[in-house]
Image 1 (cartoon, one colour):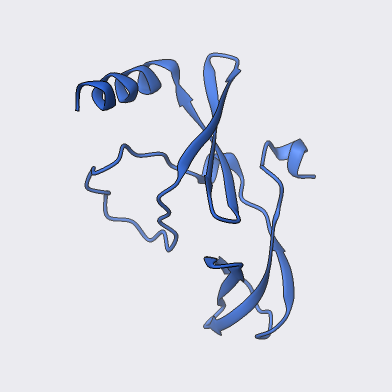
Image 2: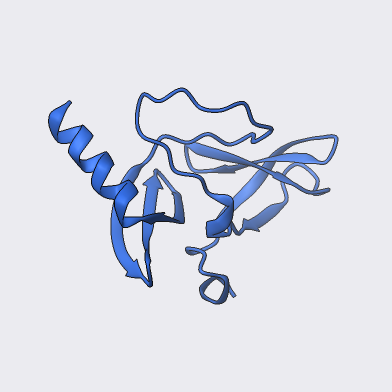
Length: 115
């Protein structure tokens, strides 16, 4: 199913807390928040769709958002996906895919080289 929606391998973890339907899922030394009604200690699998992942440059002020997950990661792989580029970002046991335009990627690379 993950490949069908373009997501990376689902994240396996254990529910560490549940407050009002927002669960914290621990995966190794990392964690991610998700919606759910699972009890603490329940093993779960979390899937993250690429269209739900937003990429930002390092050191940029993030816009106000209701998003609970803000993860600093490393770009592991970039591949062509039509007019867009598929970007895979990792942080510990977490692995996400997103899309960016070639223009966005080129400007980020130029800024990091100049910075």
